[in-house]
Image (cartoon, rainbow, N blue to C red):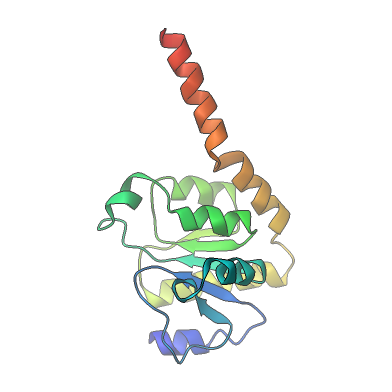
Length: 158
């Protein structure tokens, strides 16, 4: 399946946003948006109206993302989006915690299509709670809980 065919198959009532080193083809449907081409305010507006965020990075080649989760992930989850992502440190934990987060092995279009279909189904059935996603992000992906843990650990050493 070519990327153009996959994107053409997204004729659903969903908006899919992409980010990453590869650009979305110009022939993509209007409900497929490349955030890399947007201003920050435009990106936030698009995310607020979106259903699924897609993070397709090759984490083996990206030094920063090998050791941390991508910043865009936090933005997607804080916006209440379901997410499809290539694996990064901690991705499998998020996938276990949220039925709205799907890890894919890479750029395999068939696997990506299956992940999209799964999330489209969950969205259509009302199984996706944007508020639950936001709360998860707030409780698990913010700096403050990690900072408190580090601070307590440092104080225990002293």
